[in-house]
Length: 140
Ligand code: GDP
Image (cartoon, rainbow, N blue to C red):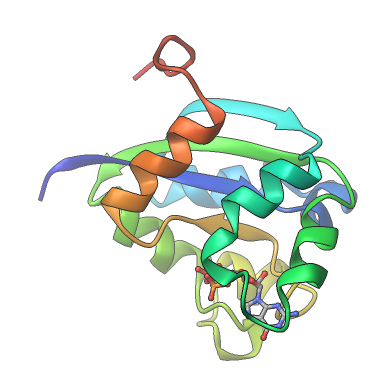
C-alpha cells in the first residue's frame, strides 16, 4: 500500500442539509486526512468539464444542473490507498445499493443527489485535483 491522494466533493444536497461536518467525520474516521478543502459554487463550465466523461449520457444535463444548484466542498484527501478507501467509505453510486454505514447509504437522497464524489483512479484523481487546487493550496 502506498500513501495516495484522491479528490472528493461534498455535493449540493449535503451542503444544503448542513452535513459537511458529518461527512468529514466519516472520512477522517476511516483514516483519510483532509489536506485541502474549499467551499465553492461550481460554475456551469467547471461542472461540464468535470463530468465531461458522461456528456453523452442521458443524465448529463441534469447532473450539471444539480452540481451547480448550491455550494459544494471540494477536497483533497490523503491516506493509504486513498482512492479505493474513499470509494469504500462513500459506497455504491446508487444509495439503494450502498453498504450500511457508508456516506451514500447514510446521507444520499437519490442516485443523482448522492452526497459525495470520489475519484475512481489515481490517474483521474490527479486530473481532478489539478482542476480545483494549485500545489501551494495542498498542505500534506
Ligand atoms: P460515481 O463515480 O460513483 O460518482 O458514479 P458515476 O461516475 O457513474 O456517475 C457520476 C454521478 O452522476 C453520480 O455520482 C451521480 O450523481 C450521477 N449519476 C450516475 N448515474 C446516474 C443516473 O442514472 N441518473 C442520474 N440522474 N444521475 C446519475
